[in-house]
Image 1 (cartoon, one colour):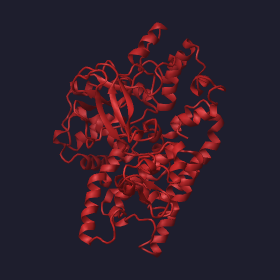
Image 2: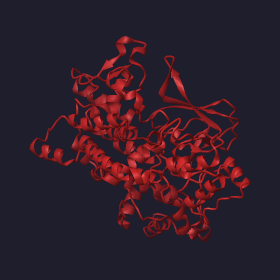
Image 3: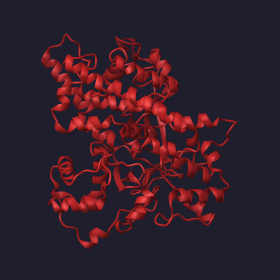
Image 4: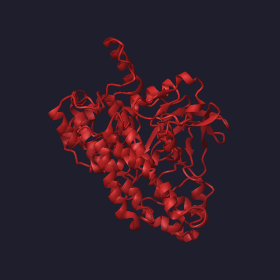
Length: 516
């Protein structure tokens, strides 16, 4: 992470917002979160951003009233309300390790729902713009980044499951629609799945098209490392905006190729649109998550070693500025089989720096953390689904949509669990809400890096024990330890699993919950 200069802050704001005349004080928190994620900044407070923008005449001098207002969560908030600017020190202590997110304006919201940015702690969420009846469909969505469940990976590699939607290839409605990768055993059940895969990941992660990806894919397979696979597919989608997509037959004319390339870019996004979308997902370092694991002291050395290996093979597979690739290009400018067009990267000044930052080790840790806290249970990253905050008394449930008589792992539907009123936040439960209070709090703190949960259910149960959380008075970890003592919860056992040594081993529980 870097501490930007004033000039860098001004330039970044101007790039992000063409016309700053309409920029309001209330927009600053969201703008800062966006800039921090996209540029990997550190040490930029809301007050500093406001001062820089004011000095450079990008916003008007704030009034006293405006200066004193701080964003606060709704009464049904499932996060922690931020304290005012005057209590910044207390807030920053509470905020340590909290995932950061922002709203990507390019996400198409379903009718009757809108996205809202609450504050730097709670981040974004979904609000109902109308009443919804119990059982009513709120939205359906296909995965923005489709990542297979670890148990399905071997079948995909054998060509039994589609490499994009992960449904059985044998279930394809039209046998002639099945597409095979000409270079490997990957198969796709429809031409649409084939087109999407080649335009977003397979052109870079196929170990025959790009042999340098083999160590990465071997590591993912051997370790069943889903979050690494998600990070690889996310990065491949971003880099695929610089590739000559291999879905266009060579017999077509050059002009037709150009038209198809334009269509692909419109459908799957340019570099800037994909970069913004991926950056908008809640993001936290994987080491922050791991350090909350009760077994961290035991696994720290071995995990750091495999992280270093993962970062090395990740760069070797995908980094266009990897040392070996730069050397090869200096000898042969048309170096293959890595099909990244360097001229497209360097045609926009900011892109090269963004990509170099993307492949450094701290950012790699964030890619893993982002995958782990955003992946739906089967593994996909969903743009709208990622807005949904947690509550132990949810009003929304997520189901997988059947296709060809099979539950599709990469298409979801959100349904109202109970009547939802206009203005109410839409929330799901990240964990089993029937679990006892102490375990719920510890799992949310460990796996999703937030807490304590202060939803209505938790507030009621905390109140019954004489506990109430005040973010300006309590440290998160200390408060959770108080909850554990009150509930008789052993923190190590509770975080490890409900029946350690019986239903699931500690190692299996930790690996499953940590995405590795």
